[in-house]
Length: 191
Image (cartoon, rainbow, N blue to C red; front, side, top):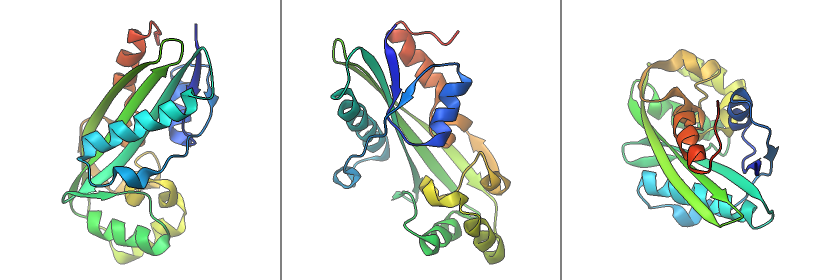
């Protein structure tokens, strides 16, 4: 079987691959994400994931590279990771009491035949209302700072999520149901 590389520094994506029982190596991929601004969210996350996978794949052989990218979309505006605490508070103020969409794109790249698989998933998230103090206290924990939309559904941020329509794992950053189907195309099974 080919080696598996996760082209991401996200601890959440690594945790999900661990849960699935995969032996993998982490090789973070840094790409210029700005050049994909302005695309439709589904296209944006697929292209970002594809470029991350290709970049890491160019460095290795006999490997399947898994890459993903997640964005939060509110009122047709993409909310990425906050630059600072002030921006995190502003994002959470906008998200509170509203429905938004989370898109995660996923790319699998097999280096021995240069085969690339792409897909994405969307989940709608309904946030509760939050007080200014709750937002400030949450931001001060540091949890929002490395997450699109400034919250983590798997952590303290979960207390602000009323419900979701779609996959929890898409919001977490790796739609494992789609990943499993894509891996099957490379003859790699989870169980």
